Image (cartoon, rainbow, N blue to C red; front, side, top):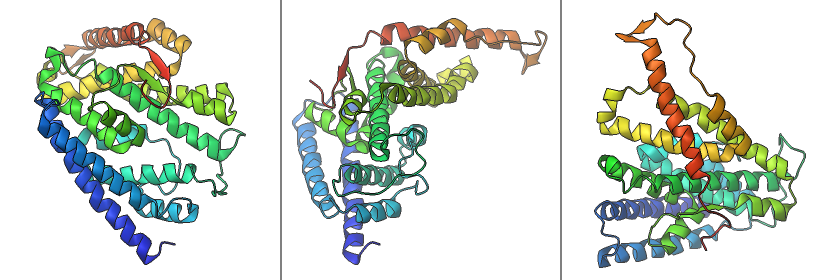
Length: 331
């Protein structure tokens, strides 16, 4: 149960996060226009850092009080039924559409969740865990894997932002980057330390924390593979079904490009054997060669979709060469 003072602190967190989001939006305008080295950009960054310091002081009211943290989490979060639900795709919707109210609430929920998991006083039993290991450790690894996946999205997204072919959606790609930083504390810290520049390396931390917690590597790989499969299955259809002429529309091009980025990220989480298997076997089959859909033969649609899939799956060969740093921080 939250006291009246706790509720006031929670309202303060909402207010300060609205301000933080506004600073992110103004920074993005300058990023889009290549003004990251200007004095104004640096001043805005300093304002953002000061706001984050103030924000963290408010969280001190909840630190090491797990019952209070959970009460605040339940007050602010969308996912009360599952405290540690992995929500990459749900989060992506808010990130891509820039739903500010949802982003503010999720940022606070993420911070509270991290507070809970780092609390030494926490004795809460976490039920219904799929593996016979410590529930708290498992939940923390789940969050680490989600953060690793977001880091992967950003590293691959970085390959698109300065390409002329994607100049019409450059602002939308930066929106993805900044909104993910807004939601994830470690990504935010990393970007603030590097003038908001995306890390060219894959910074993955789940393996480190799994080793520290003594978790079985196969269990961790299974979680990663499950996340990769979920994202792949959800986003591969966007690559197949979007019509060629629609790609002249900037919103459609953005959705198509984002689907590419997500599928490429998912491939890296599936593991080498599974990724190669998909490259070799993912084929679209047409069982009625005479079928016509909106004036186009189904066989032609399938051929176009297959060419797109092959193109994206082939990118795994390039992405596999990305340097991987097993660390929570950029070196």
